[in-house]
Length: 390
Image (cartoon, rainbow, N blue to C red; front, top):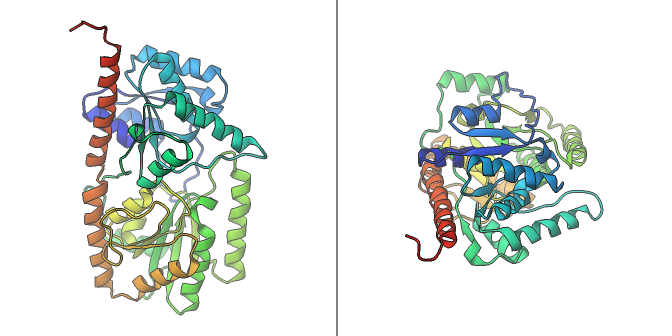
């Protein structure tokens, strides 16, 4: 989303500088070359600057360094995107007397041992109370959390759904799609289900594995491809243990050849286009980009109510939304779509794609995001303009 919104600012005639920490190392399993995120930003005309201190954003010096870089760039606003960097962004904005805007992609969970999560949340809350100009939330669920959990007034929150380039979502030849299915040994009488997301308790993969077991035990023929891996971070050890428990469950139930962990991949659009349906089992989200991408690929989508229910979304017309942490409901939804004729699934996928085009197309959501930030900039300039000046 940082890239999408930065592109939207450039398209609107603004200059953008992305101040970032070290890029994480990712091992891709698809056989394609990974492109550095920083390189992709620069190729879009976006300036970047590495600030290694952002790897440890609680150090007070990081705010002074960030402010120095932003001031040298001539910034009119400071926008925080990554959760761990948001307090730094807001405090930097306050130091420079600029609007401090947050792009909130998810609901908040603070990790660490013992009392560390409480300290992080207290630090974060103070930044929200003292330094926030506007929180642009990715869904009403995120906005509700900001108001209720962090006591942020409604005047300082708004909603802009996460979006992707739905209209131009890539397509592939029938041969390319078939090659993918053959690589994962999807038989002609089997359906290919896909889930995309890092290996994390947040993603509800223990619910997905158990629901998928119910599907297979019922005699349905399907394979599920899970794209993702454990992400580097403070909870990597915990998530590695979680990953091991998932694999053990699949082994114990003879599902390891049907529920396939594919690791990090750089060919998700092709996987989605080759699949028959998408399943999202998360416990909480902001508004999941992977779901919107699946809709862009015209896949029938099953997802939990981890982000609430978008206005106008109708079950079995645009997809199916089930209660989170409900194994039986998730399994029932998968069985419903598996049992439909292929033509019916395709029609649901096409209606879901139109719903995503109407609500989550990035050209619309990006423009809305830019307009909100431009208003913050103009209001700040007007407030700082000396009385009587013209």
